[in-house]
Image 1 (cartoon, one colour):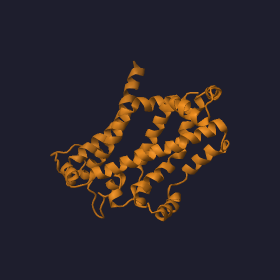
Image 2 (tube, helix red, strand yellow):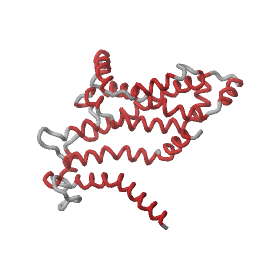
Image 3 (cartoon, rainbow, N blue to C red):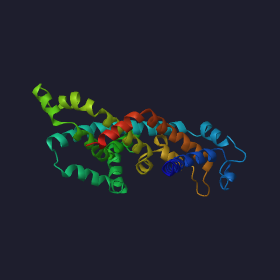
Image 4 (spheres, one colour):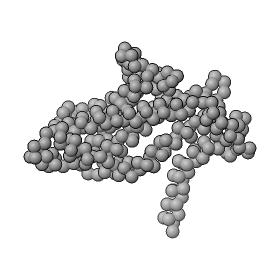
Length: 267
């Protein structure tokens, strides 16, 4: 009885930790600017003015489309680089044992370190302040994460599969495409989702490498903060709209995401 009670309390606490901020965000979206400063959780007189302002005059869906494009295309680019790389590392010992640790160590460095050289690189190639340039940066930026995640899936595939494919006359590329990729697909999908979420939420590079027409959702949210006032109500509406695509994608790919991450954790 005591164990059941403690388990119930723990579940409620965890759910409250994740759900309560979303509920409060919804409440703020229906508050007036003056009521936001009060300690009242729910609005006393709900208003749709914030929703009308965002959906009617603010180009929220343009920013949303930019974020979705950069997240999806960059995650595909990351996988295009990381899948063959992890195959070469695992099966042919390319780079030795130091390469995976080195790439992950570089990722752990503060992002501001790589901001300046990437900024001048994009400017020299003429793709600065374009969505393509930002997508290119995201695709490269998430390669270490993808390598780290995909290694677990690759190590689970027995080398005998490669040997059997070689006996049938398949070369490395055909083995990777026809044998390894279908076996690793749950892990590839899970890795792609994680990389897409990282790109979707990124702020620093998007702030310096986009212009007015190529801004992403994190930059759009920052626009509600003025010099003297922050429009919390409209920011809450924009935040809810920005969260929605990620929530839908996670719910849709939940089976692949959980199954892929669980499989990658197995020995």
